[in-house]
Image 1: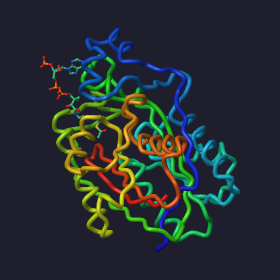
Image 2: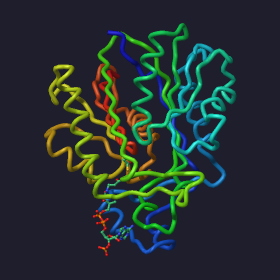
Image 3: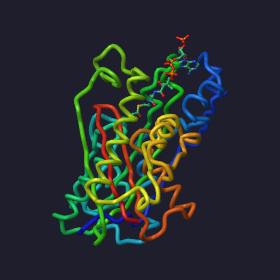
Length: 309
Ligand code: ACO
């Protein structure tokens, strides 16, 4: 089948590292509480950078590594919930900053932490129907903009960052599925015009949703592709919380789950592409490998994909 191939990836992080101890000077928390409950030890917070500048830098790095004619990019999607402005979109700014021709479909995609995987499905559909060869899919978030730094139950969980992937079609095995269920109570950030413009979350309900969503995402792929866990080289989940991933991984003995939330915390739509970029950089992803990615987040949205490397 005509599946998706990742040609290259790139990531961009703000300069400022914020450790758990740094946060303990702002709110009543400590490294022990945060690291044992979440696996998070540090995160990056923007100072000079923005969602847009991180997206542009990550995109430039991915395109440079891909060694392609960038005018062959016909689609730019930025998965984000924290774009600099209501409009114009971050994607349009990326198109301009990279000097891409104007004949390009550029838009932001809002699916919270599932955004990168939702975007993967959209890229696949559009690539099948457009003349240009490549799509640029970016996850970029400035979560620090929507955190209440007085709320210790949420402000310790998130970080800022971006990563991009240059995608094209290739004859390989690819499968993607997405879900949505319209929950606006458990995890939300209501935004402009509302009293509380910060993230609010019922942690234990999100935990239960996430565990179910990951398992459903993995099972869907195994069932629809006729694979077993032995065929899967890695599972790369949205990096919300180590305990969520450890909980699910007990069901899938022998499967390797990638984890990096200790260094980045939860970067929402950027977490899966940041993980993929690190894995490429560390030589963990080799041609022919098969990986499952699973995203889950506010909405609730969730999505899983089988990718052939
Ligand atoms: N430092 C110290 N104490 C804290 C902190 C903190 N940062 N945050 C909360 N506490 C306290 C609470 O006030 C509470 O104290 P109390 O018993 O005196 O009232 C105590 O710790 C226990 O609070 P709980 O909320 O019950 O803690 P829990 O063990 O459930 O862990 C957590 C909270 C880590 C948020 C957990 O519910 C969880 O992992 N949920 C998943 C949420 C998640 O990962 N969200 C990410 C965003 S969503 C997404 O990406 C899809």
